Image (cartoon, rainbow over all chains, first blue to last red; front, side):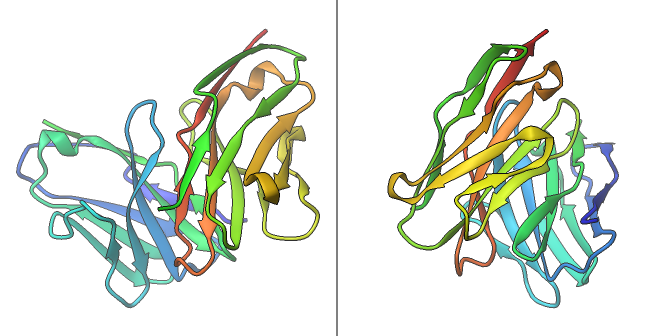
Length: 113
Length: 114
């Protein structure tokens, strides 16, 4: 139980385009989901907390207009990187909360050319 | 601000050696504590967690951790490591009433030599 999926697993896009990443909790409902970035050989950096039916809460320094988060249902949250630039290239990981424990998706590798 | 500190950046052990990875956090209130593991090329998996009760918790794959409140510590242990334990280990703290946010330590890379 407590499986979280992400799609796509890898994406390459041109600078200036937008990319949408989906996060799904497959076998439980998650009122709260989280989005992280992970840089090579580093820990996870929380970007935002996504709450079903309400606006996301962004961490300090994270541009909410650049990283659009939508939590349309109890099993799906999406992160859209708008007008992507090479510095947005990273590993994006989502997690879904189930009974105060976060379960993580496999991550999405984004490369912006 | 709350923080989590993992003392070792990279640990190298031979198979069958005992393992202890340190984790300390800075917060005086109620916390939930977690250890996650990230095997090469894979996603984070929950190893074990502590919410309340017996401060010695057992997790998957023979790992255990002990919560020592007076020391603000939650060290991870395994009596005998295997080559397959090679991975990145993350300690994390969930502060009560903070919306479920996790604060992660920097991670410890464990390399086990066969």
